[in-house]
Image 1: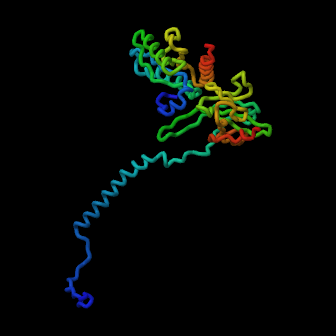
Image 2: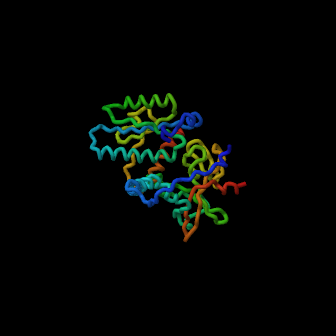
Length: 141
Length: 184
């Protein structure tokens, strides 16, 4: 579920079940043309759709971190650390651009990238993503 | 004394007059009517646009062709299909999933995969510790083959309205489960 779908009451009632935070990371440099920026964000949107639907009862999608300001991995790690220490047990980064990894974002537990596949590959891809997240929860990552 | 005894007043006779519309009244009615007509011509289409989604039928009872009857076995199988939906003026396509099987009598039914706990998506036989059950990966809810809840969730999995026509399985609205009650 998106963070904006919770009310104070619903979070008090069921917040304990939502132990995983997903942070979208746009990672843009500002050098992208508008179509390139749109393509990157549409890819990120597709990725979020693949994650949100199967796990809407456990994962909370938080506001995105915009742009990659130089080497801002420290900043992203700081956000991950605070989010984990405060409310959540796991943090997943959904990155709009490839090239970042769990090693860069060492405070996160998993980094996922947008699908660069045709529509008919979406169902197998959904299974792959489900498997990665379930493996994370089972402590086998 | 009472006024009843008084002689009624005799009104002086009025000069005969024709009941005709004055020029002012004629102009008022004509201009008012024309203005109202033109106003209605502008406002009515806008009013209709404002309530347009209400005027359309919801499409309840629509069925979507999902799977061939010959494909269905007594083991639940996952089928994905697309549903065109209209939310106000916003039209979109949702991808839905159904787990379809047939029972010993050959009756075909389809379960919704949405867990009745918090809405994650369940899978069939996806937990080695609990074989031949639906299992929710989020909080461990489990359901039997008919969708009856075994743990965590308070209700059975919902099912789709089902229709068989021309060798195909058609699925309709999602409704509360009636199959789970048949289970002992």
